[in-house]
Length: 294
Length: 294
Image 1 (cartoon, each protein chain N blue to C red):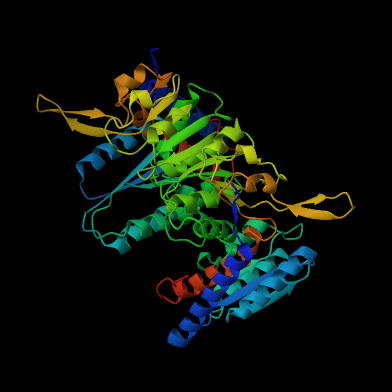
Image 2 (image 1 turned 120 degrees about the horizontal axis):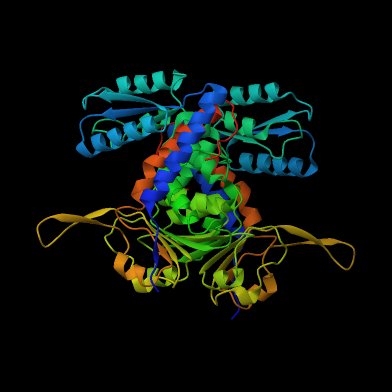
């Protein structure tokens, strides 16, 4: 058996196009321009790349993009004052504070200060709580992307057995909630789980989000399973360069699984596209419009 | 094999005694008297019984108990005003609005109005979110009781396979979070799960919280499993009376499991005791004291 490859690049491009269509529709019908504000503190190079990419894709989707750059030594009070200003700004429907913040800043206090209705990263406890309670909520972007990738293979996940490996706040825990909302049966495994290969063997859907290169082996998988690899690990090569690998042994998985996401080109492609989805949804919710078609 | 019976009555009495000891300690050392305010709207007979029992047990533990009874036709604004007053009252560390509320009142708005620091029912989205995020939080009382009953058999749950059947906001979903915090591997099953008997067969710990009389059969269980039965179902008997049964076929389970909670006399005993625990914890947290020893 050779697994089909779930092409994150194509699926993300399609999602961005559908977001752009809906943005055009709400602009035309309701004079609403969804706006995303990104706050970048300091000069972390990786963060600067992400923020540029978010800015570009937000504008490409027809939304307003606001960038706020603050020095690494900004006072906590000044950062909180900016968040408060963005909370009040009617042109801003999504607020994203790029993490990690420089040392000395209280990340939890900053996240808690964001209006939950504008929390497009889905990190505010109120959104996590609404998600955990099965209510409508802004959910973190990476888990949302995982669900969309899975549904490109299985339009309905009802009754399927899913395993989520990893219980982080950003991925594993919210992913469990989204899978429950899709009526999957969900097992959450982690570093303390016993006999992980046997647990994985029973799963129709496998989500690897642990940050350990190629930890999930091909012979762990149930034949035909759908494998979503959230890991992005940089490992050294013989030629002195590095390459990216996921948490799943990709080549092995191709021989057993039904469908697999590659790394790169899988989940990573979806995150910014889902951020646009969240910003669109937040704008519609704040404006009292029905949930958009994406 | 005959399972041991997990005696909720004895364990709850022990827990209440330990709460009373800690209440005496914080009173002596910090001049702090934990206070629980219960708000009862209308005259639901079952609710009145619960509220009386809470009042009695709160006082028996040495805490202050405040009862607020409002007519069934109270205005939403007046109920919210009472909650706001209790939020401000320094003698009140726990606020419990007895559910269900009479028709016409907005339950979600009332729960959201409670100060999360005083939300001893663990229902505010902020607490659910903190719990889902793995942070310290006030968690709902019934799942907390389930964990304490389990730990009376297994002091450590690390690496054990647990299954939670039922995904309600009050029990199933928060129970999953508490089990994850105990480092168990957790599967969440529900009405859409396929082959539930096979899923249950793999579990060292079985939590039944679906509200279907004796749904979980003895031959579903892994020999030696610990079974915590959250169900309380009233079923008619031949003599015209009714009797209480759980979600587990108790007599069958006794022959297979390692330990089982009876119904009545199991989980149900724990709920008010855990409410006292939450009130004590809330009082200590609000006063800036370390987490109490219970």
